[in-house]
Image (cartoon, rainbow, N blue to C red):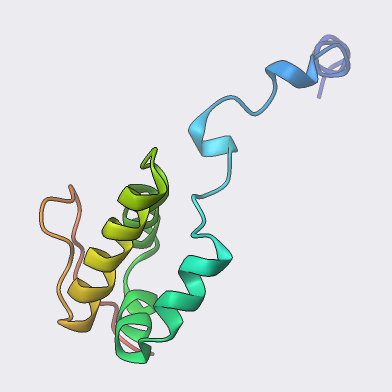
Length: 101
């Protein structure tokens, strides 16, 4: 980096850093949701074989709900669809199952 760039980097404000979605990391299901999901091994295995993009989208769909009741309902839909080895209807991206290596 050049001196002016280093100067600007050092002068950045932490409260203004990492504001874009790609800088935030991915949405994560809470520990209780993961336990509930893992209690259904077929659903969990199917979910884990989906692409990263699908898992991020589906996880965001669950965790972005404002009310806990809605998050629980959405998790139930995700688990039910995963048990049937189907993507969640209506999600923008439903990639094909990854092939095992």
